[in-house]
Each structure stands twice: as structure tokens, then as C-alpha cells.
Image (tube, rainbow over all chains, first blue to last red; front, side, top):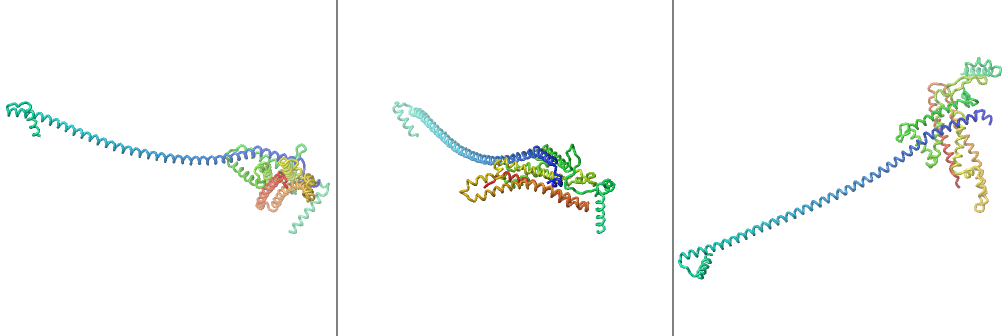
Length: 165
Length: 301
């Protein structure tokens, strides 16, 4: 053993010195470099994982939103079409109604006009008849120069008038 | 060729005559000025001493490594960012690879993270020491001194891992730390039973009826435990001598090649030594990792 120690110059002081050397390195490198570095690495990988997850979630939400948007759009389009259709129908209905009314009014006006014309005509005829009766009486008076009694007179007038018709 | 041999022998003879007797010490200084012994010694030479503590050239080298590693650690600490710089990225890549490698040994990331710092820093320390021993100027810059009648060249620096003190210190640390780790992880009583298997002896009478073979099996187990103690000592020896032997041999090789022809010829051997330095550091670290893993694994039946 002594020979061994002699050959390799094993010295416990040097041994301890080298142990201290290594311990210093171990402490410094671990405490100031390796530990924070590995913490940074772990944090980063965690962050990346979270980001990826978030990205996936956002994409999923985006797809959902796109879908609802499309659905809403479709619905709106349908609604709009419905409204347009309804409006067209309403317009058609109103139009035909108006036409009907107008027709009716026109017919009314025509009817009224006809009636007025008829009544006017009747009135005119009655007036004319009256006037003609008077004229006839006067004429007959003039012609006959004598006045028949009222009864005969009227009968005669009546006769004349009816014959004039 | 023959003449050269003759001259060599003549020189040897002359040297023996010159340095043989103690009385010749006065002559030494006169004659030996031209001939300086340049051999690579098996041990690290003392360079100076501070109050009874001899500082060897290999200790100086390992101080350089300590300083370099501290500076590196501080630089890394200063530059630590979430978005890594080039330097940090490189370090992270190395650590990631090392973690993967360590995982393949321990088989468990949690356990790896516990052992990893020690093993990785052992790797760094040994690697830098191995490589630093090959830098030009280390082993070649020194002073000449008189020793036992010879004029001896003493280099100021010597690769720290080419000194048995360093490798023994590291091996001791590795094996002792692995045992401490084992005790912490699996408990003192269980760990003691790995070496002095009292449990195996105690359970013999109880299980004798159900399993008669236990009479033969458990004493064997007990002796296997005793052999494990020898194994621990062997671990220290193999770790320290492997590293020391490889690195020291490398230095001797480089010195020998340089003696044959100093230009260009040593270059391939330098590359070889770079690889050897890396591999030896890796082996030491991996074995330490294995010791830690084995120590922290509870024995299963």
C-alpha cells in the first residue's frame, strides 16, 4: 500500500483539494447555471404546450363561430326571402283590391250617371209633357176657342199626351 | 543504426558513472547542464507550496477548469432568457441530449432529474480537465530543477485527470454519493440489507416449512451481499484507474510521438486524444449514473 501511495503520490491534502474543487464547481454550476436553465426550459416547454392548446381551442371556437355565422346568414337570407315574398303577395293583393275598388267605383259612377241621366230625362220628359200639355191646352184653346169644362179638358189633354208618346 | 545504439549505451554508461555515487553531486551541475530529463512522470509534480500545502501542477490545472466553469456558469446565468440566444440554445441542446441519454439509463424522468445535475457536472468537469491537459503549453512550459542529482524539467501545468489524486477524489465522490443517494431514496434499513443481508438470515426459520430450499438460498444471498461491499471498492478502483490510465497514457503517447517527429505527426493523435477525453468523461459520468440508479433501486424478490 505504501508503495502504491509512493508510486502515484497519493496525498490526502491534494485529494481533499480536488474534492473541494469539484464541490465548488458542482455548487456554482448547479446553483447558478443548471438549475435556472432547466427551470427556464421546463417553463418554456410548459408555455409552448399551453400555447398549442390555446391555439387548438381558438381554432375550434373559430370554426364554431364560422358555423353559427353561416347559419345566421342562411336564416337571414331565408327571412329576407320570406319578407320579400310576403311583400310581393301583399302588393299583388292590394293591387287587385285597388283595381276591384276602382272598377266598382267606376261602375258606381256609371250607374249614378245613368240614374241621373234617367231621372233627368224623366224630369225633362215630365216637364216637357207638362209644357206640351200646357201648349196643347193653349193650342187647343186657341183652336177650339171655347173652353170645355175642366173634366173634358183634362181628358182631352190626357188623350193628346198619350197619343204624343 | 548500430553506431547510434552504441553511442546511446555509452551515454547511459557515462550517466551511471556520473550520477551513481553521492560524492558525484558536485559534478552533476557541471555535466548535466546540457542534458535535462524530460520524462513524463506517473505523478503530478509539486510546483510550489503555501504553508506546508504543496500545490502540484495538476492542481493548478484543475483550478483553471474551476475558474472557467464558474465564468461559463455566470455568463449563462446573465444571458438566461425565455427565448434562447445562440449560446443558451447550444447549451440547452446539449442538456436535452444528455437528459435523453440519462433517461435511457434510469427509465424515469423524475429520477433522472434528481441525479442529472451531479452526473452532468461530473461530465463537464472531467471533460474540461481532459481537454485542458492537451492544450499547447500545458506540459511543455515549466522550469528545470535539480532532483536527486538529475536535472529535471517540471511543467507548470499538467492535465488534472492525469493525476491519480483527482481521479480518486472523483471516484470516491461518485461512489459515496451514490450510496448516500441510495440510503435517502430506499431507506437505511433496506439499503443496509443490500450489503449485510440480515433480513435474508432472519426469515429462514419462518419460511422453512413452506420452502425448504431457503436454507441454501438465503445464505447465498447473504454472501452475495458481502461481495457487493467488495464491489463498491472495486467501483472506486475501476473508475479512478480507468480515467487516470487513459488520460495519462494519452499524454505519454503525445509526448512520445512528439519526440519521434514534432511537426504534423502528432495531429492525428491529438484528434484521437480529443475523442478519448470525451469518451472517458462520458464513461465516467454514465457509470456514475448507473451506480446512482442501481443504488436507488430497491431489491425485488
